[in-house]
Image 1: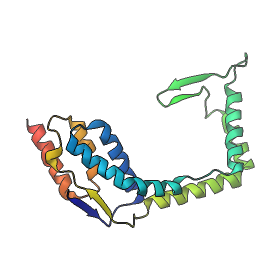
Image 2 (image 1 turned 135 degrees about the vertical axis):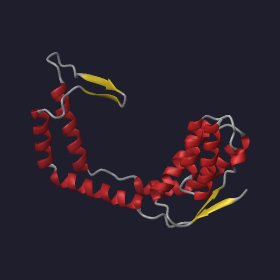
Image 3 (image 1 turned 120 degrees about the vertical axis):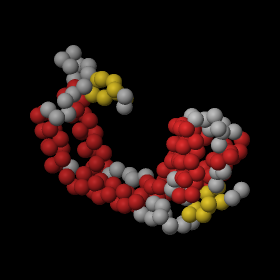
Image 4 (image 1 turned 30 degrees about the vertical axis):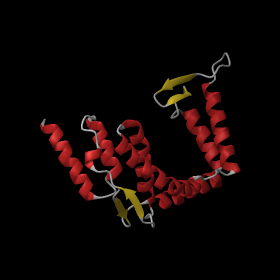
Length: 190
């Protein structure tokens, strides 16, 4: 199986995205050959991702956790009804408190806690900034990903699946992206 060697131009975030797209692809595609190629790439990237994930775990300081706890308790107090129940609503992201986070009471709560925990909040922002810089640093290793020949791609899959293939392969080589565009053009001309 032909390998695509990538040395320059990828960030650590790009490598995470390639891995995530491969995990999505395994659920979408069928066919022994393409699943084999996808699995080879997932297994190749897994130890790299695991090593990078060790850096991505940014522990919260005790003081920052106290800030979050007091903020949550304050918000719950604002959402508490006269009968003692906490009013919640459901939305596409899950369940949340039914309060106006921009109300005067909520703003005063945040301002008070932000003053009290100013150092913990600044330290957390600094940690997150460093993490963002880590993700956007160039990935220094050479990747040897397995090339997925277009003949292995089932002709009957939906257009959205081609977008997923593009998301997997785009960071790898411009040549493959061009081939996928040709395939998309062929599909749209049918």
